[in-house]
Image (tube, rainbow, N blue to C red; front, side, top):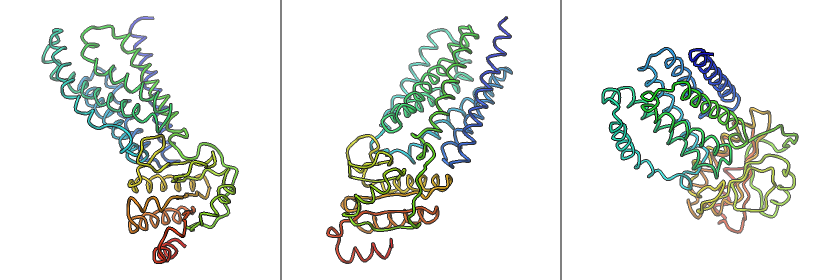
Length: 354
């Protein structure tokens, strides 16, 4: 088998894998309506166009589609980060500051190796910048490993390695050995595709991983639950995938728990990050409705939230959750200790939520 045949096989393999990944992402998006999936599907469309441009010898198109691929991938990561992770307890944005000096030092290094300035200032410049975006996307995935577990970790490893591979583009073109480089690139793209599909269809990305045999008999809408009735509720719903915002440690294993705290820990949300909680609840209600389930969201620490946000903000927050519950035929349950509220506050809560 000669070099031309090997390159042709590598091209077909890369495009086939990318097409399969695009198909899975599109299918999963239409099934669950997670916005990041739509963006990542678009990014893989650009990857396919980049591969076709590379093998047709259109270097300008390679640079353009590389940039669109990396930009869309990073955009999807940041969208999902904003909607599904509490940014206050996650990545450190100041790491972006290291990019300009590293980019400058790398350019000097390439010039020192004798690579022509014309090449560096044209296609190589744009491809290397795309590689930096891949690196940043990979680092974001790695930083999110506490929240998204192993799926995000392995995906971050492959995206980071692919970023290094793209950054090395000037060296790859200048040193030759195309078969080896293309083989490495194909393996890395396959790894990204595999772990992205696994991540997009896993429990770490979706709320409901498998079929749920239990059905909820509660009527759609919102209800206030007395603190003394909470143990009964937990027992009745112990086998249902309830989404709960909590300060309680003793909760059923089947529940998806987000712990409200100012400390950094797994699945933690800062108590003032109300928009993030609303986003999570809306995603959960929509997914449950798509699967023919009556989703249940529990807030068992409204008193704690009032300490950080004030009563008016929490009242608006709970009304927003109630609206999403009603729209998606779900149930919002708010556990309260009546002794912790003033009579006026209790009247308002009952009027808004019952």
